Length: 86
Image (cartoon, rainbow, N blue to C red; front, side, top):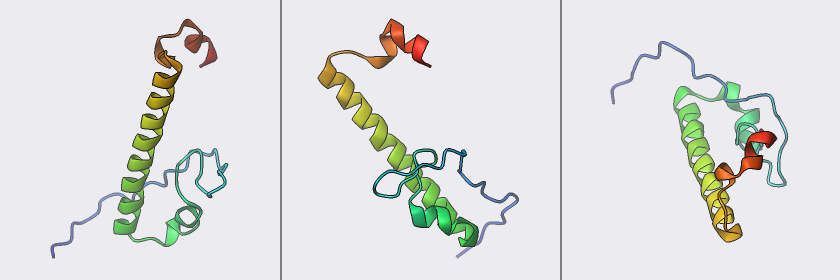
C-alpha cells in the first residue's frame, strides 16, 4: 500500500470546552474519553478515523435537533428570539 507523506500534523480537535456527558463524550470536540486521552499516542490514520467519527456524531446531533424542531412545530433559526440568544 502506498503511504502518503504528511506535511502537517493533524490538529487536536479540542476547543477548550472539556465537559463530558454521562457516556464520556466531550460536548466541545465530541470525542470519547479514550479518544481524548490517547490522542497524542495515535497514528495519523487513527486520528483521521476519530475525525471521521466526529463528523458522524455532528450529523446525528444536527438530525436530532431538526427532529426536535419539527416536533415543536417551529424552526429555531427563523425565530426572532434566536438572534438575541446567540
